[in-house]
Length: 258
Image 1 (tube, rainbow, N blue to C red):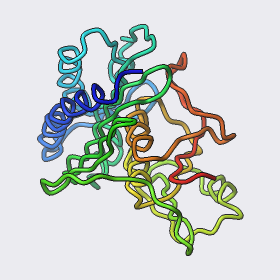
Image 2 (image 1 turned 180 degrees about the vertical axis):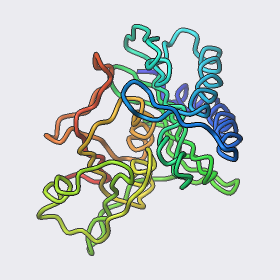
Image 3 (image 1 turned 135 degrees about the vertical axis):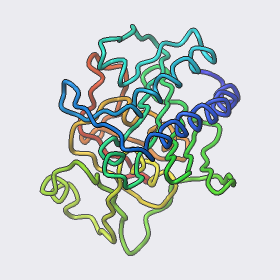
Image 4 (image 1 turned 30 degrees about the vertical axis):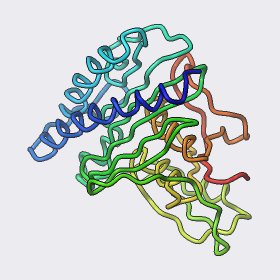
């Protein structure tokens, strides 16, 4: 894997890219934008497409040797071959949140090495909050012009704070998974913010018992791993990247050792 200092240097170069993509998204967010349906029936807007059109050339300039798997390019049939290193990009994660204007959508840029995320940036432009991490180097958030380090927490005695999807999910499956655990609070959130809340210690557990794609979670997974957490499949095995169809199994984001 790449040297931690090199990862950190690359992470710093990614931050303005994510912020510029977020600015493009916010320009469209303030308009009466059109919502279209993709082949899989998921929504897409001009914001998804314009943000991706900004991110892809920026990554090509930063790391011309690393292929990029990006959500809208894949939807258009543009799928490069990937090796040990590749980028995963979701230019607008949480399009449903964007359409409903609740602010809980993000720009996600993550780097995979040997099947695992090693650095990532998640930017929530409507909240003006950045989550960033480089494994074995640093994990931090930026808001209100200030940067602070982040880390997962030990679960409180009163019980776990669990985050669940605002737009997707199976309440019965979630209840079954949580059975036997002491739960203090169940929070709903959109996009990859759920993983980031575990990384910051604002939550302890995020079970995702529904469909996701690798670009949905790679950046958040990198932030969580850099902050001391992990993501596993529901059976406890590691979650890996570079699968033939880029689809994830059900998974759990942990801020603690089970």
